[in-house]
Every structure is written in C-alpha cells, then in structure tokens.
Image 1: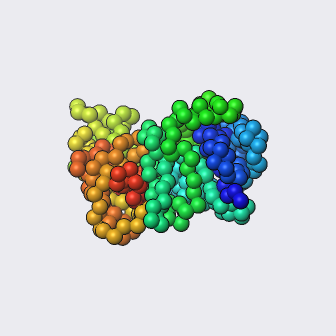
Image 2 (image 1 turned 45 degrees about the vertical axis):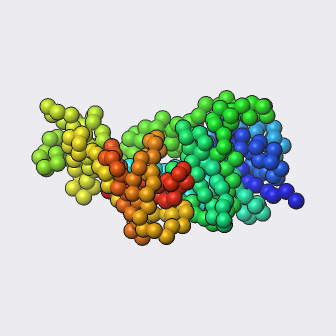
Image 3 (image 1 turned 135 degrees about the vertical axis):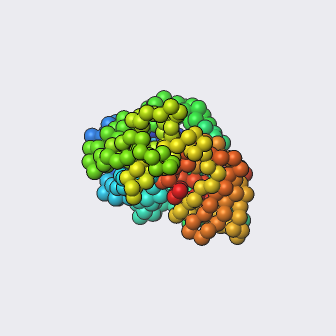
Length: 349
C-alpha cells in the first residue's frame, strides 16, 4: 500500500515540482496551501494568484488540494516576534520561525490528522537516515540551499519529512515542471517577506508599530554624541549610509542599544568580530562533545566559514577562525560538519 504524503503547495515552481517527483516515486500525494495572510495580499504565497496556481498544479497532477487557514498562529508566532525584535534592537529572521511553527508545525499537525505518513516541501535540502539517525544536509545546489533556515528541526520532526529537491538544481526543477506542463514552471521567484510589502520593513514598522519612531542619540564607541536617529528599529549592524551624522572618516553601526535608545557607530574594524554568542540552541543531530569543529554561518547568503562551536547547554559560543562582518543579534547562526547541519540558534550578541 502506497504511503501518503502531504505537500505544501505555495503556488511556486519548487513545491509544484516536489509534488510531481513524489508522484513519480509512487506516493499518494495531497496538496495543501496554508493561508497565513489575507487573500488580497499581493506579494506572497497567500495571494489569490498563488492559491489559484497551486490549485491548477494540483488539478494538472490529479491530486486533491486543500486550503488551510493559519492566519492567527502566523500572526502570533511569526509577525509579532518580528516586530518585537526590531523594537528591541535586533534584526529578526521570520522565515526560521515560519518554518518551525507554520510549515513544519501547523502544516504537519493538519497532515497527521488526515492520516498522512509524511510531509514534504520544496526546500533545497537533503535528508538521509543512517543507523537510526536523520542527517539534514545542505542541498546539492548550494546557491539555493535552505538548510540554514531549518536549524529548529528535531530528530522526531525529520522522521516524517521528505525533501524531494535536495538532489536537484533550480534549473532541473523548472525543467521537470515544464515536462509536466505545470503553470508554475517559469514563474518568477519572490525575494520579499510575504507580509512586508515591497520588502519595505521600515514603512511596515511605521504603519504597524508607530512606537518604533523613537528618536535618540547616535554616539561613537566612546559615548560622544555625533547626531540623532529616529528609532533604533530603523538601523542594522554594519550600516554605513543614512546615519545622519557628519564624520571625516566612514562610520558604521556597531551596536543598537535598546536600554539607552542609542545607535552606536564605529570604525570598520569595530564591525568585525570572531566570537558569536548564541541562545535558544537546537541540536539537529545529537552530540556528545562540548566542543565541535566545523563550518559556521551567520547569515543566509554567506558560505560557511571554519569555526569552533562551544556548547553551553541552551546557549553556545561560535569562535570563527577569521573575523566576520556585521554579526547581527536576532539573526540565525548554524554549524555544519561536512555539509551536515549539526546545530543552530539565535544570535544574542
């Protein structure tokens, strides 16, 4: 008897191709689209166009399709923490929270109630089982690899997950979708946050959290006042332009201090750090040592760099071999060993 897998259909090419590949592999496939924003939203996987495309893909593949409302949990578990992080001087990563609570939380909860054996998505990651352990690995296509944002996965999560695209490149995905005659085959990718129109997070905060507009001082690393800012939520670590100060040498944001409501600026060297303090740590792969050698990354669009991972229980320290640019509290830091995602957490300082 064929196993049943629920596939998250976003209305894009990757999830469409994942569904097609699972059919080829002999699974009973069910498509589901999670509606976490109002349908009138125009730039997201919850737009009416995306929902229609997901249904057209399901019809073409001959699989059932469901629309599930998760607007309230998405607001509580993703949007609110995103807003609160900016207000506290951090730079959040809402996609990691969405993966934990919505895509692999609420969606699996729905899928399991339907009697599904597995949940699948169009993420470019590999998953292998060896000796009773599940290894989450970078996708073959490193340019599209999304394992960085899956650091919250646990072994019991991985036991019921499938990632059909892990062994494929993006262009392969489009060719497969084209072979199946799917309307999403050449659909453009969205690089925007689904709930932030035009990726204008500053405009979003001004509209939804007006208290973000909270003027304060811009100071150097010695505390000398150089100017004034309009709210720490509108600045990021490493930022050089738009500081509103006059200086004979380039100045960069090195710290956002929510307690004093100050933006601290310094020289380029002040933005480089070797040590990263990480909180809310999750070990994707069980470990026995409190010191791990591997390659770490602190932002999505960087290649992992050689580093030590020092276990501190619920916290950890990452010590890079070479200084890293603009380590931003609120972002995600992860450790790999030979492309295997071992652990990750939220950058604290």
